[in-house]
Length: 380
Image 1 (cartoon, rainbow, N blue to C red):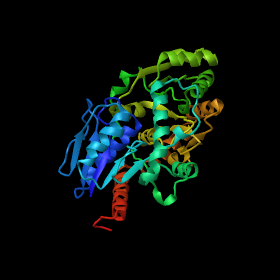
Image 2 (cartoon, rainbow, N blue to C red; image 1 turned 180 degrees about the vertical axis):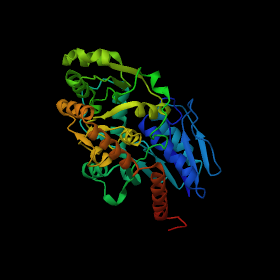
Image 3 (tube, rainbow, N blue to C red; image 1 turned 45 degrees about the horizontal axis):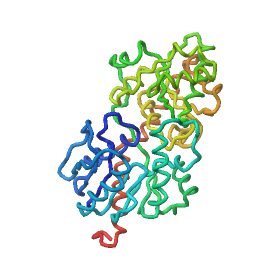
């Protein structure tokens, strides 16, 4: 097979969820499959995190403006390589493309009502682009991959995709997310001492940042320890708005906001954290859940969407719309050592069920399945 993989943004310095997914999939496919030929299409960037191997060719094309790159530059480049399959990995794909398509549709949040409180131009433009493009490409896709059973059923129900064209492949997590005996003091670049709560919130309303901060205020009122809260990807202006609206001035001096945390530092951040707050209103998968669990860090997460599926029935599952419930579990972890240690073990065992190797194996099987169905396939 000659397989194209779209990985437009993997060379950018500050990577996010979908970038890490395709990056790890490609790295595992390089280890797993030396028979088929791969052509990985990326935009220029400063972090060349993928290297060519004998049968995997990294092809840098065009500039980084997403719609032009995906709709014009990518199909033109892909056509030159006589591909059997083109796998587009980040929810969208070229509308005009003659190559058989496989699409990873991580979620369909963009098809759901938009929260008017989201002021991020970047997020709003991405939402609009996906909303316009996805309905036009779905019928052209030989397979649509998503990342949890929850999201698979959601897509089938809302977009009326036949189940035979759907596939569910779980994400994994990187092997360097593990427990450390001797944890380096890397965390000190971000916060002064260990034993903090850690929260990867941002301005997207689905991340539930406001209710989580209200819960943290309630925790501080009742805690004798008053652990600090380390928050990534948030600015002071947004925080000030939350504090003023909710009259929670008591959190101001307890919150540490270092900005973007590089992925290679995250294992140390998790290992030094007391607990991880993953209190989103909605997720299609939730890689940070697994990362924290694999580091032996108890996780408080939501009982909605995919999170119970990924975290498991024995995890700490809360109603994300209840700040009282979030605060109660923070205090329970702090005040009950047996409960705390049990949650550490539950997370470690749960994380063992997932890996990027399993993800890549299933992905390769799907490519073979799609290839066999093509009219000119020598496997059909």
